[in-house]
Length: 339
Image (cartoon, rainbow, N blue to C red):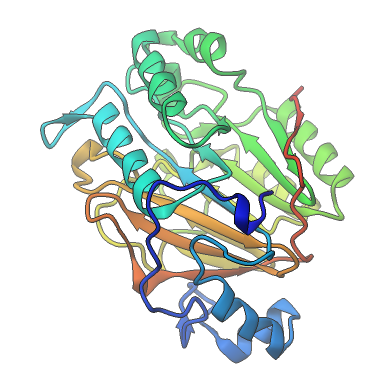
C-alpha cells in the first residue's frame, strides 16, 4: 500500500468528471441505487459522500490510502486477430495503463495467457509484464494452458495450476485454475476441499475468488456447459460453505461494452466477467478491469477499461459491497501455496 505522495506515474491524467456513486449502478437482479447501496453495504451517508469525491482522484494527493489492481484475462499470446498477435494487444494495453492510469499495485490474470501453451508464448508474456510498471503479477491457468498437453510449460515458467491464496492485509485472493484439459473448467475434489478449508480460516476477511471459467447461473452465458466450471456440485459446496465477496472470471469473449449482464449479484456475492485483453475470436476490442480499494471503505470500485480507445466505460462503473472495511497491507504480500 502506497501513500499518495509515493505514487510513481509517467503522466498525470485526471478521470473524466463523473461520480463513481452513479444515480443507478446496474447489477442484474440487483439494481443498486445510492439509497439501496447504503442499505446493503452498511456505510453511512458521510462515507458515500467521501467515496464519491475521493475515488475520482486517480493519483491520490492526500494521505488517504488506495489499492489499485489490474484484472485481465484471455491474452491469447500466439493467436493473431485483427492483424495483431495477442502479445501486441497485451503490450498496448499495458502502455495505456502506464501512460494514462498511473500506479497499479499488482495485476491478476485469469488464464488463457498462451494460446497454444507454447514456451515461446509464455516467455513473451513474461518479457512484456516484466517491462511494465506493474511489479507483481498473479496468474491462474485457463484451458489454453493445457493445449497439446503442454501444462508443464506453465508450471515451469509461471506456477502450479493448483489453487493458492494471495493475502493482502484483510483482502484474500483465491486463485482457482482449470485442472484438466477441457473447455469447461474442472476442479478436483482435493482442490475443492483445500479451498473450503482455507477460506474457513480467513472467514474474518474479504474474499475475492478468481477463476477462468464462469460460475453457472451468474453472468451472461454462464448456463452454457462449455463455459462454466465443473463439477457444479463442488463449486456449489464452496459457495455454501464460504462467504465470498467477489468472484472474477474470464473465458467469455465479448466485444461489446460491459453491461449489467456481466456483473451479477446473488446473495452476498458479486460475480463479474472481465472479457478479453486481446482481440481473439472476433472480440474486436481490448478490455480489462481496474479494481480500486480505498482504506476503510466497505466497497470496491470496478472500472472497465477500453484499451483501444484509452478510456474507461463511464456508463458501467460498479460499486461492489464488501463485508468488512478494506484494510490492505502496508507491505504486500503473503502467498499461501496450494495442496
